Image (cartoon, rainbow, N blue to C red; front, side, top):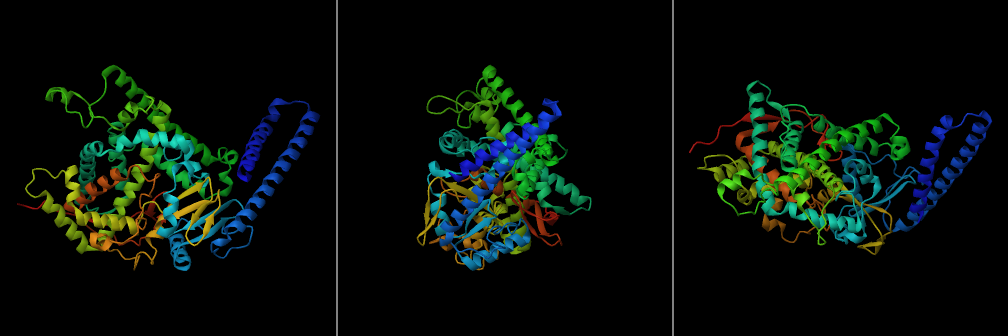
Length: 549
């Protein structure tokens, strides 16, 4: 109730501010303008006062109801923990201290504005992540700033709208569809590795993994999503630059409380830059969707990955379906498909969620293996044995299950350096967690993936890179929610099999072709939208010759 009242007050305030800015153009009599300005100022002051009262009342209620959770020391009752949650190396170290001190959960208050429960133990996060999607809501604090970019996509929608989208999108991530993407992962890796060989030959062997791998994952995603060859690994692109710009601006806005208010943000220079970058991204996606729908009407459906009809010549003439095709062809149980605007939102979300997270995962795997040459050598031997006696180095879908140790190394890196540090949820009802504790409706539940993965009660020596944790024998008895790099439950990451396939292909081919050693630069973690490193993640590359038979 309090949140709905504040939303109404905010809407009225936004409208009043817009009207005030236009009064000078609408009115000419000075006396009328003066009177109206005074009245408007009084109304604005009254509404602001009401909002403050609502905030303080809500803050007091949540403070009372969250007493069942331990509360870390605060500056004072009003400001709470505002400013203490930092997206820096020190911020992650502070999470480590929280986990050691409180072991499973604690309350957290961002001033009187937001009331959170931070959770970092499998027993506490499991009932939340497994809760029905019908009562699960994506909060506006952590996800709302993405809405102008990603629209009402699967990531940001709720309720029946989310359920319908999930049903329509799930076939696009079937194994038979993903198999064809492996060819694209091979090709994009080949382009990146060719560039690396050239740089090493020129004496530039120390390279930032993030800058190269982010472009490589964008390249592969553009091919998987749009069948579009952007050549972005070799040349700049307005579309690629706009995606990077939007990611940066979302992080900047999240850290500035005043920019949480739309009427202020959209009038700021940063808000204008966000609108411009959105225009570029939306224009590109909208054009592709419209052109592809027209092609389907005139040329018929492209080849599906399971289609075995027709002769060889007929198959060669058909274009293989990509992500956009699959969305255009999807129908719900009533025979209704997605609109162009809905497809645009899902494609933009796939590009946003698929390139940065996977690039982060790959980069940190290579970093961890550069620190442990024995594990790197063992992975390389596994890949070389798999590709022995082959005419090409391309990996097939069936090969990915034949890389058990490499997969263990990938999983341990995803534990130690999770691309996404946390996910947040709100619920439309009170939620019970162990110890008789209850999270009140409307609280933001911050599920700390990083905290869970570094909880010493679950993972002994949590800061040590040890792939043997994921040996099948060592995994017995471990909680199903001790390892959640892709979240869990009905709202888990729909693209996790896509991401794991790309991780295996890129890591395997990279280790076959290069030896990686530390770049001699101190690594400080940077948890933004995904986990990065301050100033880049620099490794030294040594070109390897393919093993001779």
